[in-house]
Image (cartoon, rainbow, N blue to C red):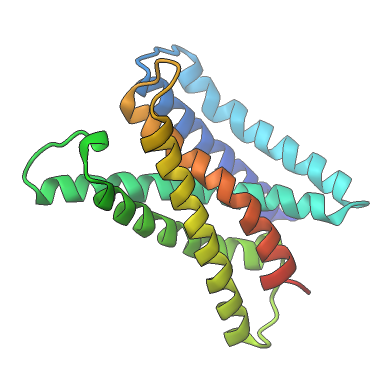
Length: 208
């Protein structure tokens, strides 16, 4: 493993610890000393998982690529979530009223989701190209960007469909607070679209 692999794994684990704490807070759960322990444990767990993927990847290279793709996706998902919440907050501010997120119009939610998805996808592009798939070739740059754009648009469509399904059609389940359910909807939509994205990036965009 390279130094960048170790650093990225530790950063991802730290971000996941922050996200986990945010969810516990939304649920009104006091996790006590785990609040301080998670930022230590999750980076270590993230690093161990990446090392295992690296070890397995010596015989099955796609496993290590998949592990790095997941880490890039995890960080991008947090960016997706933060950009989405900021966009929703901005729309509420523009309307001069504190509107609960589930009461906002579908158009506002879709626009916010598109903005957050595209910004997060920009981060995914650089992370996947230069780290996960280690594609440093500069040949056919315009063709690569065009293929990336097409794959991303399909991923965006899937992301929005899944987000609307989870947030509007399925709705909050298992006693989940509305705010937390919206966050879960963003994350679950990102996970579902990630299946397509990994396949598209590996076999279409960054194919060596």
